[in-house]
Image (cartoon, rainbow, N blue to C red; front, side):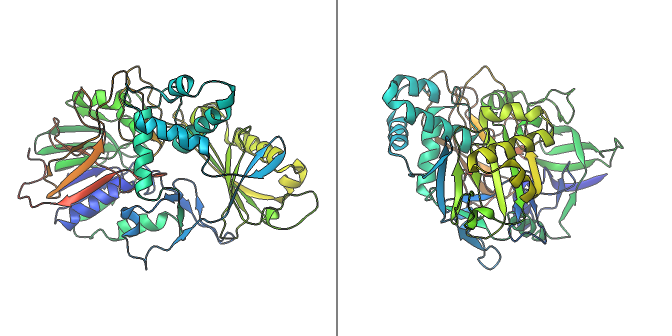
Amino acid sequence: MIHVDVVVVGAGAAGLTAAHRLTEQGYSVAILEARDRLGGRIRTEHRSDTLSPLELGAEFVHGMPAEIFSLPASDFALYEIRGETWTARQGHWHPTRDPDRGMERVLKEMSAWRGADRSLQSFLDDHFSGERQARTRRLIRDYAQGFDAADPHTVSIHWLAQTEQAAARIDGHRQFRLASGYSRLLSWLHNGLPADRAMVRLNTIVHEIQWSPGQALIACHAPSGEMLEPVTARAAVITLPLGVLTASDHDIGAVRFVPDLQTKRPVYDGIAMGHAVKVLLRFREAFWERRTPGYPYLPRLSFLRAPDAIFRTWWASYPLFAPLLTGWAAGPRAVPLATQADADVIGLAVDALVRILRVPRTDLEAALEGWHLHNWGPIRSLAGPIAMCASAVSRPYAKQGNRWPLRSSSRAKPPMRMGRPAPCTGRWQQVTAWQTRSCGRGADSCGRDHNGPFRRASPFLRGWRRREARVERQPSDRDPGNE
């Protein structure tokens, strides 16, 4: 049996960051990860024949969040995306005016709304009805589905307004990439763990957690089904995906808590996670960057929007010159793709690109050198990075990754700050979340925990948009797990 001060379940950005900070405070940590790799929603592949890293998961740094920009510049080279955005409609391209005045007006009115929380769709129907507003309604729906992977019929307008305000505070309109890929961040976190106080166990599937205040017993097994050595600790940090937390005990990949975390269920039920499919097409050359009769000439292409296609958003690697186009389908539009075979999804992506670029399919296929696909449909795996939580209740909570709140049936209260001394780190963890009538804390809060030693770690970064969280140093002489 392995014994440590704290066990961290999950080796994504949240788990690695939690372990990093715990070891800084002198605690011994065991990190248990079901996959055969680190990273969770971050997955970077490097190829010798491609200058640009292949990001199958998180790719962009939206705005200038302190969590990223405070890191050592010598270790993390960032470059800003300054290319052109084009919109393709009915076989024609035109430069995209960004931001759109109609969308700005919708977001401004949502921010000023003081009535009961409601869904985006109902808000648009009541406040932006009529034929003259049809384009504005379509643009804002496309934005919510594409950027947040949200369903306009259920996503909370209070939450949308809050996240837009948070993005504005960090210049969210600016886009950056990590030159060496997001995996560089994972390597930095992993390499920073001291060997004498931290251990990482991959291919370790946690299936049961028995807990009481000040003690946790973790039962786990290998992918082959073989039982592995259990781990005991004085506290546990849980960084599991929403799909795992909401699964029943009989589902594959589910984790059983003994006793059950009953007070957390209302929190999980108030959160949903969006579907997303990401396709990377590698070509022999970037044909859109050179003048060829019959082909589009888009030498500074950054983003290409196609509202009529299944894959509505495409982007290139500009300002890096790499023969790579990435297609993105998210929200309700991505739901049918979740159950389709990978080859069929790639075929749909190629079809969409043929129509958008107006090039012969035979020519496009001849130029295509390879493809990569990450299908984050919830049916694929409970442990997948994107999961949809079907819920009949509606309470808004803070978004994480591509997680978004369901609309509230009653007026949501203003954001509140929730925190208490986290005994594991000797710090206050403060998380902006929506107050609810049930338990008053979001799913990722490290606030007052009614369930003994368990903490739901807030992530180090958000996959597509920064989550508001900060940690303030406070002295604490408490041991991990003591309430």
